[in-house]
Length: 485
Ligand code: HEM
Image (cartoon, rainbow, N blue to C red):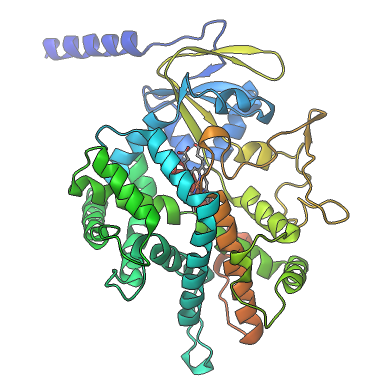
């Protein structure tokens, strides 16, 4: 007995010596929390925005917290964000992404060259190729909409807005990027969506490593099923199949990934490309349908650009100027997108804040921006930040508003749903085009046939909005992390 107590005390002492950390003069304020090792993990995990606001009130715009054994420095001053975003030498984007890749997708890529993968993504989702991709997406969206919103009233069915938006965009996105043409034996998008939804529901817990044993089993079997469904995607190059997926498969093969690894990587891409677009369209439609003024303004803008009777695909086939819609989307994402921008400190770095203060970031720690709290919900930047104002990003005469201030200085980052800098979202323009096209078409359907939309949480604003908001926010947050790949 005495030996057990002795060993226990020794172990505790050793643990204390190994993990002890005190603040030096050059460090940001340090807050380890009261629970050994866990630190603030529980409070952080429960409501990150609330926790970080509390820490900001206590310590200011920069502080280091202990979270499940890791030290994370949080920076909340948007004037200082560039010093993190632009330093890819000291602050690494891929290491944390690899941790998530293993936890969520059970994936370890051999000889992975993130720069090559990124170049390949850019080639297919930006510039010239984006036009072709837009037309493909437009065609699949049209077909999915026809299937989901039949003209004949007797075929109508009731559907929640979230599921309607997500399934529509998922199926069209899947066919455009993974399935090729529907008639070439590609896997039925509905079966992929059904499994994907189960996987998506467990994702946050997978990322945090908090699945219960029963959930672990479900996660494993859903993952297995999705791997099987996705196995043929992008294997054979034929007319109408996805050039991006072939290029991705080729890159994986060149890096030495076997078939098993490729299946896992394709699932990761399915999630990275589909995980945020559907939920963003849901929020946008929900806000539009509950803000008549916003809805009228968007419809007026669309009717000028694409009057009834003109080609339905026009909004995806040519560049269009839609400042009202852009403001509506920007405002929607300001309120609902909450990505963590996380980097690992791979070499000691002095962080220069905009106010002239300097802090040391220690090697092995993580540094993290949370733009949702500031700039997005910062009352000094956005008047009444909790309110949805569809024209927040419009000037008096309808041009795009880009002037926002904090501390009397104009801000470079006044909202950041897409991240920024070298690791900002590659799919941003594709996502915007897709959501805009989907919304035009849905409003068009609504005009032709009064589709009954169950607004779900939007109907019971007070009771449900914050819950769902949180849920989506967490989802977006995890999605963005996985976007790191
Ligand atoms: C509403 C939809 C979307 C949102 C809100 C969103 C958000 C983000 C954010 C916040 C990041 C940056 C993460 C960081 O800096 O740590 C990111 C990165 C990324 N996103 Fe998206 N995304 C969306 C749609 C898409 C789509 C459709 C694609 C498909 C092409 C895509 C591909 C990527 C990629 C490849 C990266 C990583 C860039 C890199 O390697 O540096 N995203 N996204």
